[in-house]
Length: 82
Image (cartoon, rainbow, N blue to C red):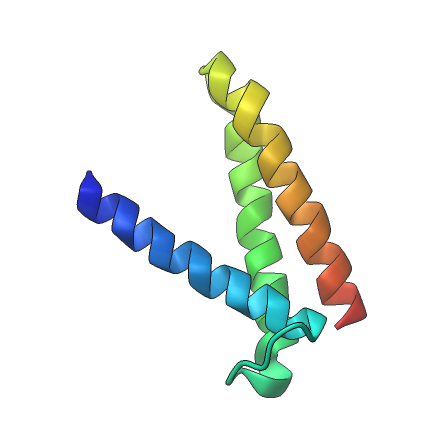
């Protein structure tokens, strides 16, 4: 499980870097494809939100659904403006 947590941390760091790059906060090597990366991330977050909303776990619905919804909203705003 620790290895999975490390892999997830790396993925989240790359995702954050991509969105920050589209927002113009940091320079990243994606260049003009960064906007497409942001839309891809938004698509994945949409799937994540749906899965968090339909899970039988009340804790996931209560905690993670709003967190993923906020991440999705921010990502969409950045993708539209990028």
